Image 1: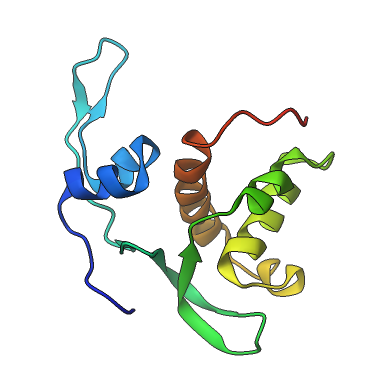
Image 2: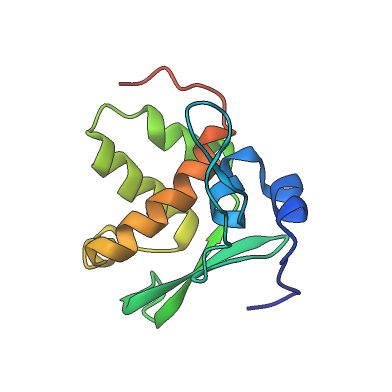
Length: 137
């Protein structure tokens, strides 16, 4: 992990966007707008200015053949967001998107365990909540 990890929740949201408030540690608001659950930064998600690192429970093989438990996710490009416009199902779109920003092959992405995938989807949803609407299904 290069650079200095961001620990201040306001700094994280300023750098990465509102979609990361829950993972950064802000209180979870209920339907009435009042705090429903006190916030706590997710211990397996590490924010840096140029990437987000997610600690996985099991190793995953990267596109270059190396194995890691610390999956680095780069900020998505417009081309990465275009993946979300494809006509495939939502899980397939998310996996393709993850491959684009996480340096994974489709084959190796398919080996990610369910709990890790759920956490990765939380991070991806943070990116997507700040992205423009896509017109795809």
